[in-house]
Image: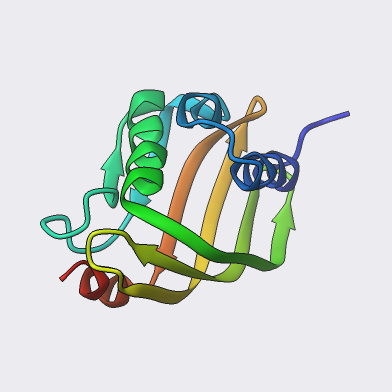
Length: 133
């Protein structure tokens, strides 16, 4: 049976919810992953482009060190086969300011050979940067 993008993304999100560490989470990604979260690179440490599994692990490490997730809800996953998009909403507290990020999001994922090769997360980048200031 072929592993679909939906399967791989669901597994990643389950691992995140279970509190699996950054290095283990990064094993879900290709070493050549196209990782991108747009936003204010000078204000928010975890956004931007990341390179390889080390970059992905850095993202998850920064996220867990600098913020506390309050809510992360996937409302729908569209697509299957090699590509899917998860739509949902999140609430996160920035630890340094105490401010809350509230945003809808879309995670666009492509999978090859059972690993995530493309991960683009789109969210309210203004709300994220504002919570840091």
